[in-house]
Image (cartoon, rainbow, N blue to C red; front, side):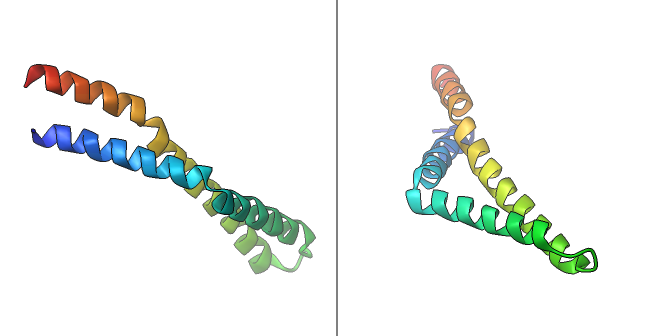
Length: 91
């Protein structure tokens, strides 16, 4: 097995693990409730509460980035499978 094949196998493993996380009901609930709480906090701040508003905004963005990054791992599955098949044909 070449170095590149191991990379694709690692990508497949990470894709599977990321999908398990995204499908986990507890993690789904965490994302939904935490984002909802942060948005509520963000919207309920007063005009002079800049630090609180910024912190809530940043946390919402961080949660969304985390979820999107996990989804990116999942989305790489088809490409990794295709590349792994190609490298196996060459070897």
